[in-house]
Image (cartoon, rainbow, N blue to C red; front, side, top):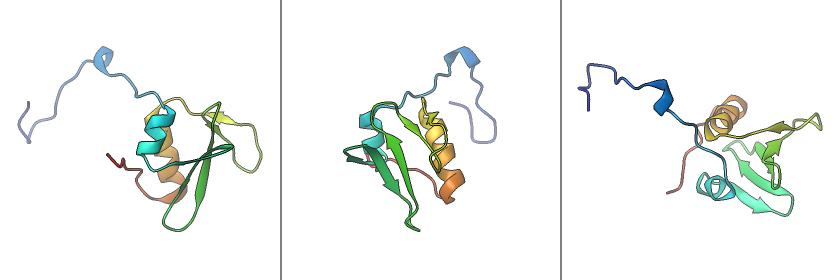
Length: 88
């Protein structure tokens, strides 16, 4: 491992995004409901992820597919200002 004063080096071909799964959503605090997964922030803002397509929509607009964990983390932070953390 590199020392703390130097950046780690990694080749791009070894970096793979983490696929979203229902199990992973559960670990990040999403609750399952009949139509999807819901996570509430501390200010009671909620985000719903469609159970079957793993997509979200805002105000009924075209659904946006979420494929990877980092996409969901970025979305959640952008909407709530809070980090999405796992309950491992």
